[in-house]
Image (cartoon, rainbow over all chains, first blue to last red; front, side, top):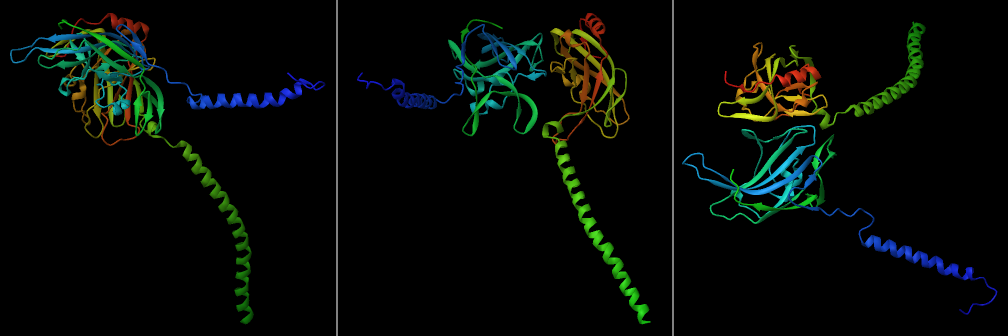
Length: 220
Length: 213
């Protein structure tokens, strides 16, 4: 306010503007660094429900439903069995026939899989070890383990309900995805699960979190 | 005597010295050139080094339907191809939303007995269909020992959409062994199906194909 006359105001402002700008830039830089740098933040996995379609890279997967099914005994030595089933319509988008596989027992080993069932993680609630999971493709007059290229097949992943155990109200799980890339020791690219390093191992990147209500009273 | 003795002594020395010097210089140059050539050659060879992925690639012997295709260790011939809408196994009858393709093939080996692996149906756009697991191995040619100089015949069954047929071929190989061997032989046989042929084959699909003889 009390400017000395004669002096141009620009000359004074300059020494203030430069350090101020530097300070602002430095603070912005610091804040960016503190927030984890300019890397892309990992995408939040989409929450998905019944009927949704998920692109898993190698597979295009429709979440059909979850249900309880009853398998009648085929003879009097067997007992009726009840299963909680997850039903998917899976299209193999790769160039080769693939087997359905099974969900990994341990999360640390899940990243090694390139099968469809291997991409199902943290299935909740947990069923007993005896209960499964079993995974197969339902087809006319006999089941198969094969997912042929370019073909859509109905995949069933199921757990047996032991004794009088009540089926859960809903079932939730996470789904991983796959990418076609080269390995560190192999120059020919192949499909591998998208995973990030975590300690000694790799953990699959979660592409979607799924919750399905379990339909009751279905009989197969 | 002395002069005649001295001359032969001195003369070989002179002769040997001069060419010797020349040789030393030349041979150094030659050695350098040879060394450079060897180093260059070695570096050149490095670029031809096959990595693990390339080593696993097969050596393919190609041929047409009806031909004996010799892969040195074994020879395969595709005799005929039929389509079916369902297949009668011993215990069940299986159906499909697509087509069953029954490939009747014959095989012989050259020195050792082998069992062929389940073959792969290779489509014109590079898709690979494994032989179906819905038909028991026991009723396919994969269950038969292929012995030297004895021709055996049998079937392989694929399940594939009709759209996979035009330009398709079948690839036969040996089962993967414990000892990993680079560049295993395989036989690729073109089924000779153009658009028209594929359509005819699909249209002529029989309702039930039985594996019982």
